[in-house]
Amino acid sequence: MAKEITGYVKLQVKGGQANPSPPIGPALGSKGLNIMEFCKQFNARTQDKMGTVLPVVITVYSDKSFDFVIKTPPAPILLLDAVKKQSGSAQPNRNKIASVTWDQVKTIAEIKMPDLNAFTLDSAMSMVAGTARSMGITVTGTAPWQN
Image (cartoon, rainbow, N blue to C red; front, top):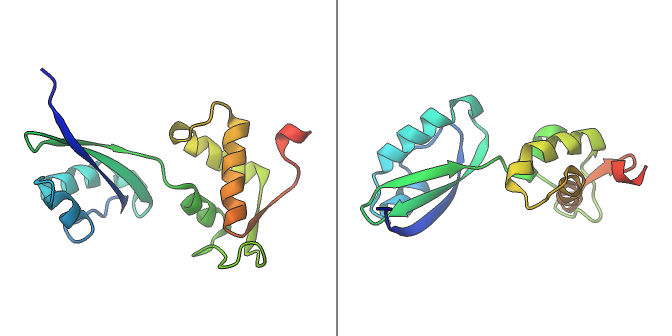
């Protein structure tokens, strides 16, 4: 018989660096989960993505067991890595901090494709380009679907 789900916990944790301090400890402790067990499993599964922020969705069952799904890094994190900046613009409509090419947008869209609600790569690229614009990053060149 399937286990009964009592809830979900969504966190953003750096790969390979989960520890029981806040925000992980209080979030999992309130659900009655074994915090150290989660940290060990998460760190083991994310050794190859050390230091990258990764969203994780933890499914909590009624017998206090859990399992979790690791998502792809958020698009803003990938964009900031591409332009080698720490944060986006405070006024993205006025101050542009950097620019990316459509090839860079395409690689980020290919990475994000499993977690986006897009059917085609062009629509995923459009979503990533919109995120870039809202961060003050300009996308140079013409969009591939406009050629």
